[in-house]
Length: 191
Image 1: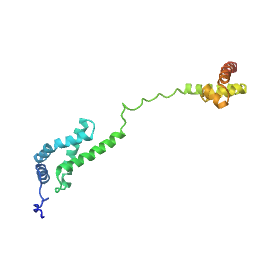
Image 2: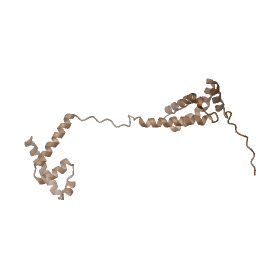
Image 3: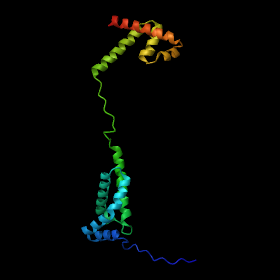
Image 4: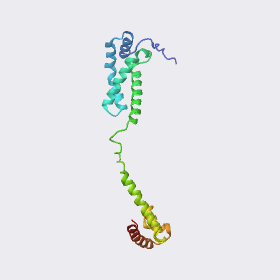
């Protein structure tokens, strides 16, 4: 079965009022012709922009920059192509570029507050205290030294110390209590 022949589509001339207005603008640089393009394409461009970006103000900016790009890019436009898809392509490229740039700009509301730098005097004092405590622990008898090093210098709990040293929890608790008492005495007499 033969299909009736379709009339040949001519790409030589514009197909829609927008295409005709843009062709007129390209030919004559008539601002009224471009204003017609803006009036006819603004709503579809705004709808597309609002689906691509988060806020209305950014969407409006994208539409404005798209229309400006069309104004500047008119001489390089291919008149065989419809204007609206060309404009939407420009808009989508600009939205993609905006999203990439937006990801690089830190949002101050989402950033963690800066922590103040530690006071150098406090840092030195802390380091000296830690050294004094470690030296005092080394002077204690072996059974106290092991539990105090694990507890004070490594931060282990009595239960973890018992498992690590293979001692009962009650033995570790007793050694910790007696070791801490001896350590306090050692620190008072040494300093």
